[in-house]
Image 1: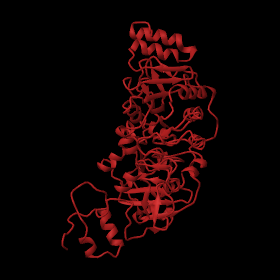
Image 2 (image 1 turned 45 degrees about the vertical axis):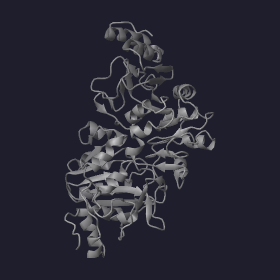
Image 3 (image 1 turned 135 degrees about the horizontal axis):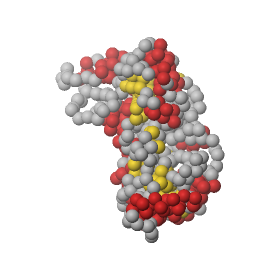
Image 4 (image 1 turned 90 degrees about the vertical axis):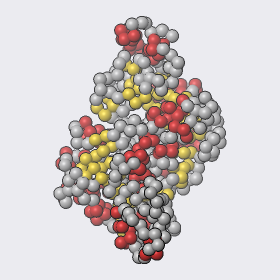
Length: 486
């Protein structure tokens, strides 16, 4: 060979054994020492290879998983639920041990976290969903505190080294290309750094644009199974009276015409979107978005025409919601799904006009510290993209960005105040008091930027529930040694 390849990844060797490539093909490989994917000869998972996946059943595909492996699962609406169940059954029947299962927010059951799987599997969440909270609280599973924007670095820096990557994709087109569909986020980085890829091919997975393309020749195993995507427990229930009022405060006072929005899913984002029907030329740049966006697009309120990047496009990274949302993004060039280290990159966020970031939390203390990932010592979710967008909006190039924290003033079930004198012992501060500009409840808007601790306490007490204001004022005096005042 004219230029022999001295180092071959296990993935490269595996592929060569499955193809009829000769020495000439190997000698044409341009090898260098720069970081690249496990495909030594192909730095891009959308580049077609001279091979075909093995089409098989989920039960057969997961037999490639062995003791000590690290397995990555795609998340949100693209959670490969059938593959996860088959993996769990295989692990138990084959007597496997020490398998790490890593993922972001996943949908459906997580059987690999059950008590009968201790010693076989250990889940490691980059952002927790309800299906793993109990296991984490009981010490059977782990979580990594990490910004959403930095999750791909876990793979590219080889901190997490997946042996097997299990994903869900759309069926291949006439050229063999599939789409990662509803979850591009960190999935692309995981695929590019995994030894084996198992793809659940599902006709219900929408074909999306942007960074979603992956060629089927990169799959080692492909499993055809058509099943509706999970809806994230989307019930269609309208926002409560308090949530509706929060949405009105934000929509009528903080969202300008021509603003670029970041907001997630849930009752409060839905309430905000419902308050924006009379706005003009809004844009979306968000790691995820809700079904309420569809109505605003149809009404002409969301056009993305004022955006400086990706003009005329909605930019997102992952999705979860009702079937209407999946139908909306399917084969729709108006939406582009990007890798999460792009969507959540602060410097990218800051380039959007009037960037308005709307995020929720668990509690806020009287100085403006925001707890979003835990309830006391009990881990609840994760950092997510909150701080990525809160800071990106604050650094907006036009000086008109608005970082917003929105929450109900009390817990609807317990009636406990969510604006608290001090955060619960062991709770984690995701967004510091220095990052917070606006806090909104159903009782109003507290503008905290540039305020002293005394002034912050006063502003937050004014938007707390009336039943708790007197106690909060007393607690503020005890903490600050001065009465809260504007």
